[in-house]
Amino acid sequence: MEMSFGPHKLSLEEPDIVRVTLHGQMGLKEVRETVAVAEEFKKGKGRIYLLVDASHGSGYSHEARRAIGEEPRLSPYTAIVLFGASTTMRAISALMIRALALLGRMPQGTMVFKDTEEEARAWVADMRERNAKES
Image (cartoon, rainbow, N blue to C red; front, side):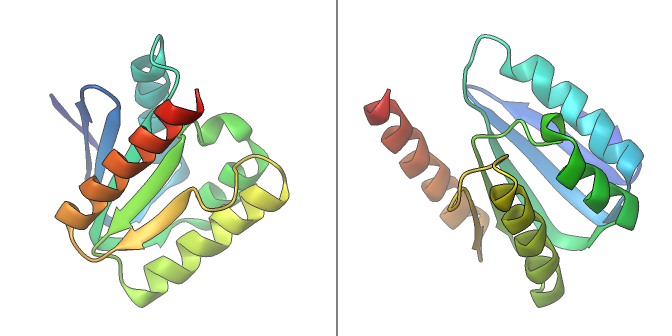
């Protein structure tokens, strides 16, 4: 099932993947809407992973970046992997995640960048396996 949030697309993939395709800049309204869907999907799962196709994305609005840093519920993901991200998008996303880690809202190493979707999915599969062993 695919949903649209402004120009962005979101799909839920069992057992635990929220896949977002960015088109341009993601604003705070879209962040809140996608997180609401992710939180509902997460119920009864324990962990979910965010897979982001950033090949057409240009980052997050200032308001979205600030809110993500201030509101822990806006990052309900166990791990995040972006693929196809530009150098600028990588830098912006890495700064946001570092800020969350410093605030104790997301463990270090739970966000990575991959070149392709196949590499991103393999990374999620590895994280899923690692997390299952730790449980």
